Length: 119
Image (cartoon, rainbow, N blue to C red):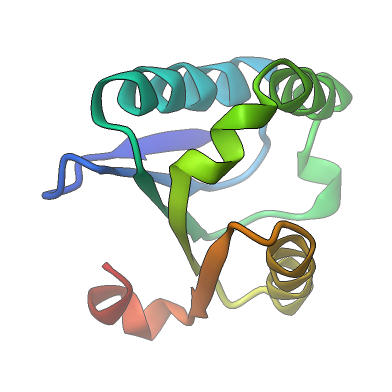
């Protein structure tokens, strides 16, 4: 499940992952991402990952993710910074790889006890 978080800053989209992610979860996040990008421009993403394993990601969610980025490749430069809060080392590793592969993406990882600093 993906829960959308209320963030104090208008240019920040925040969400929390806890358990299974399906196609509808991914669509919800991408719809908000599109709306904020159109109205604000440069965005920041704040993500908390609580309980999540690779088996919690549905195949339809992966397809939706790939479809979105192929349809909106120009949106990547509009994402100014991404903050990830998790204690899952495997998620941190994948995040670091994504940040290295996307030259316009600035990302930083925090542990759950650093949430205040991450925000």
